[in-house]
Image (tube, rainbow, N blue to C red; front, side, top):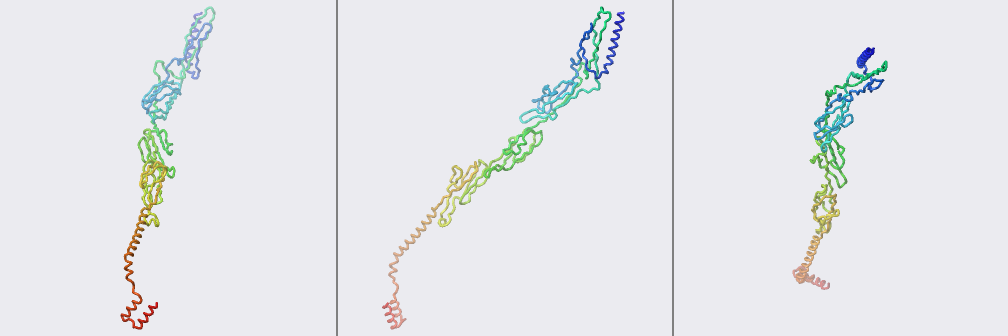
Length: 415
């Protein structure tokens, strides 16, 4: 009787196990059940861990490649926000992730390279989608029945709790290789630094990182007036040590560039004079030499000018310094300068001429005196004829009669 009971019980257990196995395929949304060993009378059900707890399968093997970056530089790889390692430029590295989840794989947006160069990844994030399946298999586990019967009890009652483990994703054999292998390449492109320096601020806003082969146009003013006596003239753009004379160059960014606007400061030289017209006024580069010149003599107006009086150049005057006293001189233009010609009056020629005139007058007077002294006696000896002499001469010539002669003589004697 006891053997029959045991046989019937075993049959029931087998049938229940078969039913549980058939029913497991329909439990798509059943929760995971983990049953620990529980005693019931003298009956024990052991504790079993789910398969996923010790299986290393069910993972992606993701190969991350990096291109466009030199091999001496690397980028950090993050998976789901966690750093997982770095990959040098031009190489690849494998990472493993669970295929039961979606994963976001990221690299650094920028990789710093040599001075003035960095590498930019436009698409620095890539999402690895989880495995997509239309069903989720169930794996029933039938624990062995470790029990004994208490034969002292006429009838033994015990219960069997079957365990069904639910695996929402497929996990292959733990001894096989990962089921899925994927690869992704992160491509970088170089960017170059453009540095623009301009003392007057134009185009300095163009400073920054530029994509490879992009073009940048610079511009600056031809002339900047700082005052009425000082200005700055555009000389060239100094680009990486080479000068470009144009004030509006266009650069192609195939390397780091440094552009500096070079200006030449100019100062004004103003020459002034009361007489004559000085030569040399104008704009000169700061630090250069200028030649100032003026005619050294100017005629005086009026009487003294008629006698040869002149204004003669004496020196140049300007800011506190020593200037040459020559009418033609070189001046270093280290600041705006105003030079004024200083003149002095020159009467030496006038005095000479005046002296000569006086001497001439004196000579004339002296000669006159000498001549007078020499010829005056002789003149005096040659007296002019008197009225009586003239009357006698006429009478002798028969111009008048005796009576007239006597009468006229008588009148002359009376007078």
